[in-house]
Length: 323
Ligand code: PBG
Image 1 (cartoon, rainbow, N blue to C red):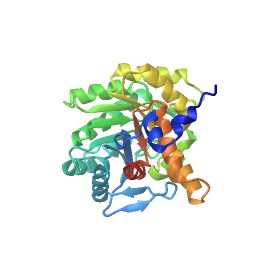
Image 2: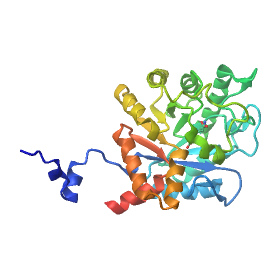
Image 3: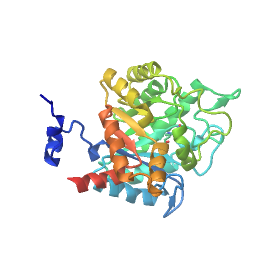
Image 4: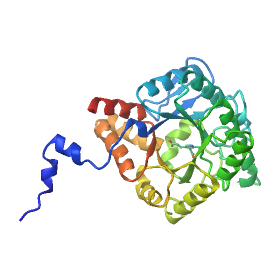
């Protein structure tokens, strides 16, 4: 007797019935870049389809994403000026803070997250303050906490520390609680690798380190047990959700973290993953739409509950057409 798995693939309706992994617009968190100015929609060359917004245009974009059913966005800021400590990152009138309050005023239910890190705000491009030529972990914690509190004060629902300093989730949680922001959540970039896939983002956010690299704080791509350790630490320190980043080259890590955490798990489908698909699709070498859906489904199948992805808008539209 031949066992015939193909019986379950015979028609589209049957395939729909036995599909194991569902992809929903509710899984998406859309990353958006905001910078000073008015009526700005500057294309980001290394990320076709993505733009830099100003506060007025990002509000419009947020509304469109919400109308598509996307429940959440994560904001990245390009400040008006940079300095050694990244002080514009916690300014009450900073561009991210302005964007948060403008978006929440218009779309109060949209879940607004913010990236908490110093690299976009420091003139040296590192994710923390420098002393004796290296990133000073403990001195950085207080600045990250300030930034997180300023985002919470502006109305952010979740802050998402991406700096990879030790102890930052605990420091941010304590500062939020002390300032009365018990309800502001933390989505921790718990497992963040020192990845070459962030290249297009660093162009977009003008955040490439001016000397050295991030290997002294981000994780070695060769390590998996260390990912579990990082996840455990952030769970212990009070993260509400944790993240693995990047996504596609680290599906095994998503799977392993999924198996050991009770928290919602996010994965960041990063700029390089997006840019590669776009570049090949523009040349006609791949079917960009199908590759997009296959990648996003694979990230879900690996165990992620939520996906931060530049494809959010496009994939939401595609999901709408398919149902
Ligand atoms: C900030 C930060 C980075 C990304 C998210 N937050 C860049 C980095 O660590 O250099 C990358 C996102 C992407 O590539 O899409 N530290």
